[in-house]
Image (cartoon, rainbow, N blue to C red; front, top):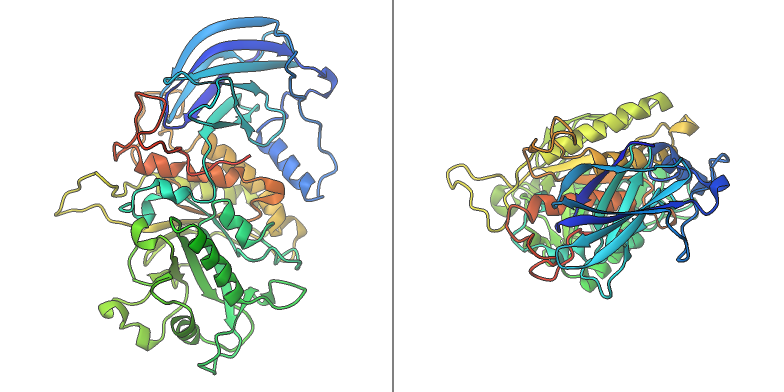
Length: 509
């Protein structure tokens, strides 16, 4: 007999485990009890997809509809929203080649089931057992810790529509990408993304990290900005331009006016342009107020909808320092410390430890990322419907930026895709199990975490590869923890949200 399963309900609805069933695996020879959502196996699956691993193992075969359980047990394990339960339900009774099926019920009568271990390392949809359920759920399972996390699904295309206009951007947990347009054929040390910016937007990414170099900096009439990564162009098949990227973003925002995109801009490349020249090009050719937010303050979601929010990692020209009644221009992130584990500057607080020179340092990077998640989680942001002290109001910032990216140009094992293959699943595992559980962990149910529980802006490499958006989905779950709970807009007494909304900003298989 193995240990008991731990279940974390990361949804805004109470869920109750009502039935436990046990089955023998259909093909015991192929059964891998550790083949689900563990760091080691998820890493193996990820690198296999990249063609970097030849030692992958088969995953557990899913049960078919004619499978017969060898035992059934009625139980009543109630799980309140955003709570963790170490149950008394053993993951196995007879032996390791066993599948545990759990049937869950919502307060409104809906029922769903999930089998563990899950058939692969990716997230799995819970099977609805009632017609037209009010909610759809997804689960991720870590067999190494016998841990099941349940999250609600929603529309990826326009997840921000679920939040009130008064919500400050700093109160949201926002998935982002590092060197966002670098999905083209390029040097592997230059390429950081698996899919295009358009596909990233369609799958919920709302922060872009962009590096540009002015093409003709001395010509004030020229708007040319080349997309670069350090000293290199982002594509081996020809130059790529910032204008095309902006058009892609603005087309998306026109089609989805409830959304916004936070765009961090930095000057890189080998030319002789200056930051001041870049700022003038952006001001004169790009940042019209109908489509851009350039005020030097963190906007509310209502103020930012349909716009690109400028985060500037460059110094402005003198003429822009007088913008907005002398307060400046854009959210200020021009000079955080290089290779920093934690730096506060202007409108941001950043973890950007990027020089992972040896593979042994990846674990250090993982730890720094998790530390920054907890800093973001401890923040209490103003939310709609919550009154703060007018003499000591809750501030609307800073933006917590957590860069999961790192690389070493000279070492293959430390190229962006290789680091992401280890770091992304480790971070996903941390967010599912350990984020916002209090100092004493899941075995102390009375321990209350002090803070909103958000994760800030999480800037990733290689998300969306072969349709895998699990990391981005888990990141965004913190938005509802931070905003919806304290504003009192959740309805825990029924199985539906008062506005008919789905609760998780997004979660995709």
